[in-house]
Structures are given as structure tokens and as C-alpha cells.
Figure 1: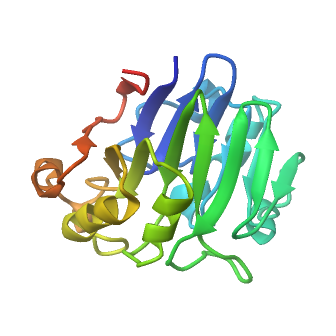
Figure 2: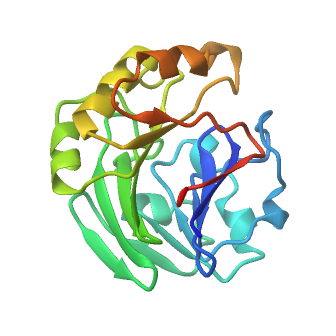
Length: 220
């Protein structure tokens, strides 16, 4: 069974029963966090960019896990404490024991000199998951949807720093995704959004509103 475990903001875990992938770990200082870094189990940590609200607890999670960190090389080297890393770049694909990871573009700032923001397309547990990272709406999302049939798109809807509900709904259309999970909203007032508004805007896909601390069976 493939499970999506949401920890608040843009931090979540994909768990196929054998491998655990954690994305954009930010728990310390995250008012929406429902778990402590030392409670996280991870085999891989995927980082979209080096802003503190996406990378802040990577080292803390690594202290308790023999995990591999994946990201842009400038980002995975950030802090200097990460031991096992796989640096990759836009357009690259990794074949890993659970499936594959493909790095795709995102439009945002990087949080570190030389860094590049990114998103990920991940094949795991018989599903294809697209995590947009922090980004605006961009036309090449259509190409991402053409390259892979997206089962679940995990998209920011908070606005201000990323696309808001209207643009995220258009992204679902561009991606031709079957399902969508909104993230990166309501952590602070500046990104306050009503996910039901987003749900009402989305056509031809199922919107799953997952609250921090909740899980979703992606096989259902």
C-alpha cells in the first residue's frame, strides 16, 4: 500500500511499505507540524530548494536515519553535514530500488547561491507522483503531464510565495493529473487559503484535502 503522510506546510512522506521518502522537511518552527524530526523515518530525503521552510530539518532527520538526500548539488551540500547524497539536475532521472525520481523545473528563488528550485516526478508503489515544490504556474507543466501520466499531483496553493488556488487549478489541467493534494497553505496568515475553494475550481480531477497529521491511501 502506498501512503501519503502529511506533516504540514510542504513536508510529507511517501511510504510504499518498504521505502520511506520524505520531502522538504520543515518541522521545527513549523506551527502546522504534527511530528518531531526525531520521530521521522526516512530512507530518502528529497529537497526542492534551500529555503529554511523546506530544508530546515534535513540534518535532524539524518541524525536518526541512514538516509540518502537527493537534490540540486548546491542544495544537498548546504550545511555540510549530509553524508549520503545524490546530486542531480533538471531533466535527470534516477533509477532507485523503489522506482524512479525525475527532477523537473520549478519557478521560484533557490535560497542559496548557485541553487536551482525544482520539482520531482516520482514512480513508487505503482503510482506516479508529481511534487511541484514552490512554484508559479508555468506552461511547461503540460510537458510534465505528457511525459508521465500523473496519478497524484501535490501542488502549493498558498499564493504570495507560490501559485494560489486559481493558478493551481489551471496547473491540474495542464498536468492532466487524476488526483491532486494541495499543500503549502495556512501555515501563516500570509499564505492563508480555503482548500475548499481550490477544490471547487478543479475540474476533471479528484481533490484530496489532507490535514496535517493525516494520511491518505494512494491505492484507493
